[in-house]
Length: 462
Image 1 (cartoon, helix red, strand yellow):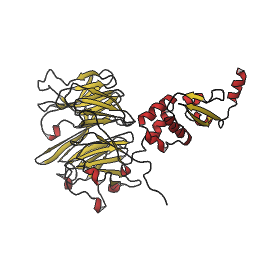
Image 2 (spheres, one colour):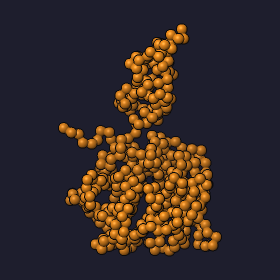
Image 3 (cartoon, one colour):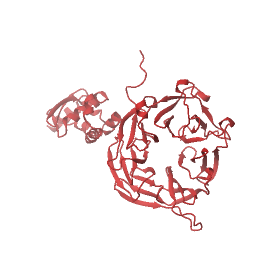
Image 4 (cartoon, one colour):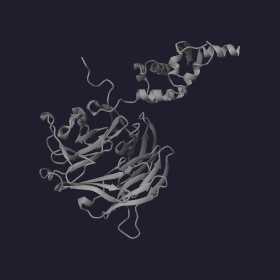
C-alpha cells in the first residue's frame, strides 16, 4: 500500500490538481502553482503529500486567497488592499513565501519625477521628529523624537520604541540591524542603544587630559563604514574633532582631525559622508551670519588624518560666483560626485570627486524659463540618492535627474516632485532615501513623509 502511494506521488504532474481546505474554505489549484513558492516553502511540501482528500490548513482563508493569486499571476489582486502589509507578511512567512510577498508589496524603483506621498510615519508620543536615518537596502527607518528612538521595518511597521537618557536627539545612525547610535547637541557623548531589547549599550566621550578645553563634547554628525563609526564632536570652547570608533570593540581608533576657533573654516562638520570606493571621509560645515553664508568642504584620509582636498566659500570658485556660497552640500556616493546648492542664486553645481582642483564646479543651468529658480536658497537642503539629486527649497521639493548621453552644463534636468498643496506643509528640514522610498521631515510638523513612485506612472506609447 505504501509503495502504491509513493508511486502515485512520484507520478504526479505539475498540472495535476490539488485541493486545500484553508480555515474551512476549499481551494483548488495545481501542483506547479504551489511549488512556485519555492522548494523550501510549506506549500511546496504539501504539494507532494499523498492522497486525494483536501489538505486542511488552519489559517485565514481570505489572506490565503490573496497569496494564492500572487503565486498564480506574480502580482497582488485588488483584494489585497483589505489587509495591512504586516498581515500579508505574517501569513506569507507561515507558508514560507515571505520573499515573494516582500517583492510584491515593495515599491517600484524610486523615480523622483513621479513620486508622491503615500503615508506619514508618526510616533505615538513626541510626534515632532528631531532626526531620522533610513536603511539604503530595505527602506526601514529609525526616528528620533524627544528622547526616544522608534524603529520601523521594511513594511514601515512599528517594531519598537526605546526611551533613552537624553532629553533630545539631534543625530542618529543605524549602524547594525538592531543597534542605533545617537548624539545630542545638548548633552555630551555618543551613545549606543539596542532597540530590539530596549537596552542601553555604551557611551563614548571625547576627552583629552592634556587639554582642559576638551570637555562636554557634543556630537554634531555621524557616519559609518563596514568597520568604523565616524563622529564629529564640538566643545563649548569651540574645540572640535572627528573621532573614528571601532565597531567591534567600541573603542576610539583615532582622532582624524582637530580644529580650534570660531572661524567658518574651523567649525565642526555638520555632515559626514564615507566613500567606500576611495576610503575617504568627506565633511562639510555651513554657517550663516549677518554677511551671508560661509563654509567649507574637506576630504580626509582616515588612516592618517591627512587632508586630501578642501575648498571654502566665500574665497574659492569662479570669480563671478564670489559671495554666492553654498547653503548645503551632499555626495552621490555611487557616482563619486559632489553637489552644492548656492545660497544667493539657488543654482545647483556638481563636481567630479575624481577630478578635484581649485575650481571643480560645473554649474547646472535650468534652460526652461518657466521653471528657473528666482531668489535665494536660505532654507535649502540637498540629498543625493539613486543617481538623483533632491532639493528642498523652503516647503517645495524638486529633483534633478541625470540625462543620458549629455555632458556639461545640461547633464541634469530639473522637475518638481510635489504639488502646490504639498509645498505648503512646512519648511523641509531633512531629506533621506532608503530602499525605494524617500523620507522627508518638515519644521514644526509631526511625523515623516514617505514618498514612493507608482507602478502605474510613466509614459504610455499610443
